[in-house]
Length: 484
Image: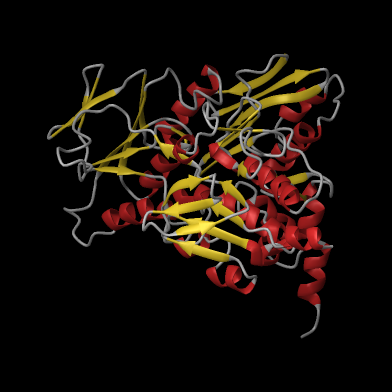
């Protein structure tokens, strides 16, 4: 009995205030461990949805709408949420976390949820002699970064607003930022050092479709070129071009933030090495989840694996049997007039390839099939059947001989926007939170969906389908038809 009481009083300290940390706190609260939990967040904002930062920049979301939970939610559940806390050391021998102000926080279990740090490309002139960035250069990783960009775009004087921008990096984030700036009237160009856009996610054919789509939307793309120097004349590239620009946005990748783990003499390769319980291989009281964790030789920069890890770890910390065995990643690009979904690693998986492309329409759809199952895929320009494809991918459904090709054909009803309404109840709608169409239909409103299922609070790619399901559900019609 005494031992059980001691276990219930274990102090859990989470270092980091990102999406993985927020999901873990929700899991701990659900298991009655809220009052034993302390969150040390470096930013001054309560955990928020970083995936939708580009939507704030674009103007389709308000900054306050990104909060995953309000500060009051943590306080009401006994969670000690501390903002503006910079952790400088983990003293494993004393079971203490040390902050920058030299105060310490004791722990029984400590969780590293520190995310990743952006890579600073080797561009001369970006960093000034005093160590600060050139005023024309902006990073885009946080709500504060987004606020600084918005302040530039909203300057009262048209002369002071940026008119031309160069995005360094042609990955998911780079494309989203480019579209957001273009929507706001800024002439944008993208510089990508590799041979096609989304090089890590799609093949060269899909990359060409994306480049053509970006050109139609008014954004020029420079491939196989690297920015070398920022001067008064603009951004110089290694191909001889100089791009005139008022604004340079850095979105070129990142790496796991594992400096604390290294200082604490924990095993770090690319990320903090953890076992199937997300526990450090060196210390049973230290755990890691999200971008900073390395499990089975793999790190991930996507929200869905981080959230699954958080769910597993919440069980582990509550004393329940649970193991993390990896996750099938589904990544969505969220930008106006640009639709992309990537399942797994289509460029690395082996199997039979089923592919349909129409460069004129700006569509490219590809599935990698092994033993009758979808093991990877990339959809560009037409996501009308993404719900069914994602469901088959996630459940590893064995498909018939002709089914892969049929799944890649456009949905007959896609000319309208109601195709998603036809999804069966067991079809997965939100890959980030693992929410089915039936679960969405059982909700009364979008707010109810967000609160009870967490759908739409991850990458946001499921939001249109969620709205259609709500609008067409018998429950919704019944509620709206009930006399007041």
